[in-house]
Length: 94
Image 1 (tube, rainbow, N blue to C red):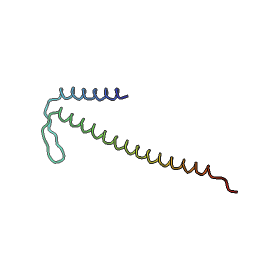
Image 2: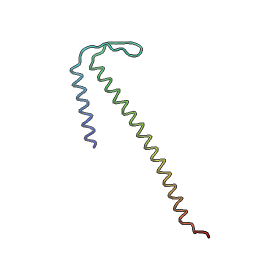
Image 3: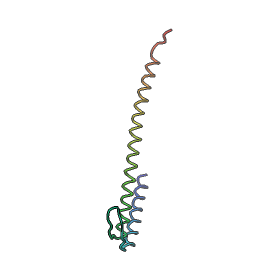
């Protein structure tokens, strides 16, 4: 599985390099408070890198949330199993 994910990352990197090599023209880019002239390859690289970083950040946060939730629920299950065993061990009073 790790090999496949590494291959996907390498392919994405190579595609980015190929697009960057073909797009050397200058473009006028307007951002929030100013504007500037950048090479198309630079803008593509920045957009790709920002998207990659944001995607990893979101997936990482969701993964941590799921992991903490799983740990909390596992502790609850262990506690309930312990209580159930104690109830089964008690003699029945009639």
